[in-house]
Length: 113
Length: 117
Image 1: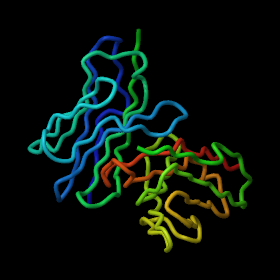
Image 2: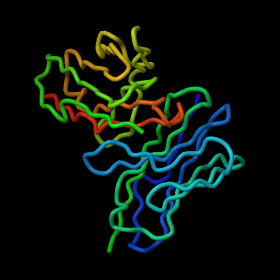
Image 3: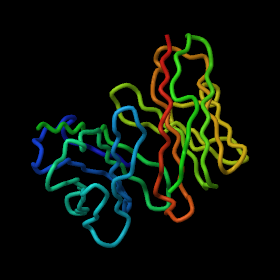
Image 4: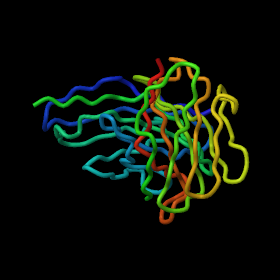
């Protein structure tokens, strides 16, 4: 069975600082990996995804993530945090050929001035 | 991508009653899903809504409690039956297999925030 672990339920950064949100996955087959963002009282928005090919993927709003098979990780980064980045971030995994998404428990990003 | 709307956006219901949530997509999609997000928690898949046949439920979810319909490729409903306060959650519809996107890319609706008293 697949699973996702997000380390840290809350991450606090200062505006302009590096953002690093951690995600590790478990999958018996090559996974598809996703990062979603949820702003308060809104649905989920896809930030980026990894399916095949280049292991460093770039998403919207300056975010990027790197798929590291040897570490079973898919950490999300952004060089410089903005106040508008404050939200809940979810990492998710699905099997190739299936559509079921398994989500991590989420990380709330707090950005201070 | 796809534009997904859900009705109602929120509701407050009495214990023992039922609520039907609607999900409408602006284009035909292959897959439709229903998720639950309990307060302060992550998303859990309830079921896959299959067009023209019974939904496929995940472990821990049953049709009697969460009946689902999908009469066509753009619309689905989820009913939360015989509600209790434990059903207070955000219910989200998602879709995959839209024109121009991969089958493994899901797009989410805005959610329905349900409070059961």
